[in-house]
Length: 499
Ligand code: NAD
Image (cartoon, rainbow, N blue to C red; front, side, top):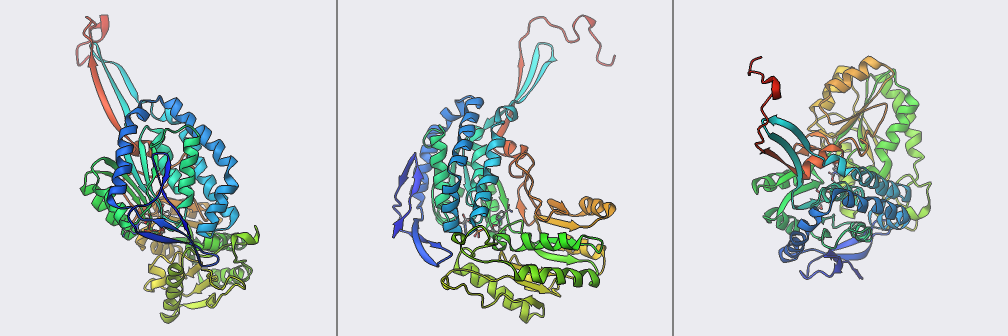
């Protein structure tokens, strides 16, 4: 059995806690490795190293720090296939999807090459007689990140790239379900010129997370994962005086207006609902057709598309639409929710129960499901399913549809499909959700914009990547300096205050 390690101070270091978690190959159901779960002492050793190297890293000029990012981009491109292969093997997503995972992280690294521009600060010359005032952005020190299983390349890079470009040291606690790629990324950062210890990976579970939250040296915590854990980490991190941003779960609605291009809407729903086996925080999990006629037309278009979906292991080639879900527990949770939908009276139009793949009977594959006539009181509507299950809630009017999305506790992403500009504009203006698509089902902002939801999908003030990342990973210091040299305010004009 392969035993994975931590990545501390530039080296793969074996775990010493004696605790391990299984890492599965979701396509076969086999345990392919075990990953060590760190103790408090192991976390402390990484924190000590980070603390010792961070001041020197912060003293490296921003342009040289940015050059590490430039080189890292080259290395990501060089090793793209290798990274994607390791990612698919632990996560289960298709090979093109795994490359997309690396690519969307890479784009944030590219954005961080602009760190010198973002960190420039502000200057007011002659704010008073002989007085200059300037603001600078300084690194926080040692920062921590806790990431989910579903984007094991992208989300770590969203965090560590800006943190490190700003001059911080970073300790990553990736998901214990697919920990290999984050360690490969750390090795590549060092190959790109990052000094040892500036980026480290400590694998683990709640023990490692609590050790981070309690550690007074760690100045900030970034978290992405489910809402209950986000809420816990935000509360505990803030009460321990840290800067914290936590991104949680989602239930993304797509409203389909009667005037929408129904083929476009159906294609979009199939990609956004079933791609990556529905394991995306920006997946569409609720379709909201407006009017029964729209609903009937939509369902008619959806059913054959869903039935054509190819489910299989990443090794089966690029025609596969989605792979297995990450664990048998995830599979059981999804199928349990499907059962609840049936029991609570929703109509299961496409029934993926009993799906089995020849040769992969022990894999964590879940067939695609489509529900119609879902109502807001049902568990399949209220809960995040995080699987290939699309629920249809029929709305009587546009007002009813927008209100439905507004009333849901989650507010990560949403979309509307329509040909009417007034409706689209009204939707964008009124909806209380952070990322909005207009005829775009998965409106993930590009690296130079910021990413973040509203309501129970986020805890904290600043979004991920874009300019917010540079705000999150720095502190502003404002200096007022006076060098009395006989210069009078207003020079020779010598204005009186109210002139
Ligand atoms: P998760 O909450 O189970 O785990 C996330 C991280 O928290 C992991 O590193 C895990 O080890 C750690 N963790 C788990 N239980 C913990 C506990 N009790 N105490 C402390 N730490 C704990 O989430 P997941 O299953 O890995 O990821 C899926 C979830 O992430 C979904 O809810 C999805 O919507 C969400 N997600 C959100 C975004 C976003 O940007 N909003 C992006 C991706 C995923």
